[in-house]
Length: 417
Ligand code: HEM
Image 1 (cartoon, helix red, strand yellow):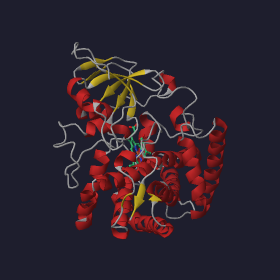
Image 2 (cartoon, rainbow, N blue to C red):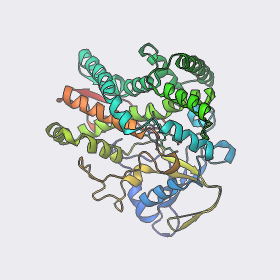
Image 3 (spheres, rainbow, N blue to C red):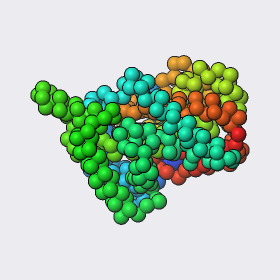
Image 4 (cartoon, rainbow, N blue to C red):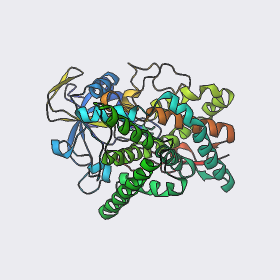
């Protein structure tokens, strides 16, 4: 951070991403920014500049305001990464995309979001528990030490999404590969990403046709049935076209795989980093729900945060931020704001209420949050029951961050039991 001690009124300027002492600790800059400069200047890895928000109220208010939209290249908004280093999701160049703005977006959310009810999550739980148990048992059979990220964190959410879409178990590895290539920042060439997109679209088109012919108990079949009903009843909402169904499959995979996978690794690391946390959960497993929420709040390594483009001037925290600005909302900095959370830097496994911003807020808030919560709860319950002696196999200081731009995580989560 630029030292502004002699010019207390000049906005502070940071170069993103910021880092803490370990991947589990908050960067020191957040506290100072929240206190002295909640609307700061930031330089992104691309070299472009943006406005950086770190206070809870500012982040929540901005995200909740439908006038402010996700940036696209069309807006001339700041770019996150230098040209040519982005995976499909970073560059926005996916072959298919879910509607992002205005009424088409609201309609899509009504149709797809309607599936993620509490009742449905309860119904999905036993199947998810079996998936988690199978992966944990395989990890135990291979023997300690293990990388919990590779054995459980990454495969579990992709298996859950495949089940949700009615994709058979034999095709899960293809989904894992596609998901990886859509989000990867550096690992795949543009050609590989393009080929993966084409394969995914071809697979999903065939899969949707099969669901149309033979519906089952899954999200796509439910959306297709909704289409038929809508046609019959002249419903204003209409249904989703085949292209939109393909885009929905891709959207859920991209939005729901790596995010949850990383969160599993970070949640387990946070709970094991101070083993009294783990022991508290062993003694009282009824804390699993609040412990999951607190892990979501406490995680400092969420990646960049969420970007918004200002098509008009905005007053944020008493500052005028001009039209044309790109704003980076740091949810993890907001989640540590003492103005919103008592003892914000203490991980309190029983914290209630816990209105953290890890799933965003407002019109784009995470559509899959009920699913993500259920996944995290199931993983934690399964580990506590199956591997009570679980512990980190390396000191916390040796955990390493992934270099992904969008979704922060740990490269490995070495564990023993
Ligand atoms: C712990 C795991 C997860 C985290 C931390 C997370 C976080 C987020 C955040 C912060 C947003 C808002 C982005 C914005 O405002 O621009 C979002 C949107 C979204 N998430 Fe999640 N997510 C998670 C898991 C999931 C899962 C499991 C799914 C579904 C399978 C999912 C589906 C979506 C979708 C579809 C959107 C876009 C919503 C829209 O634009 O209206 N997410 N997520």
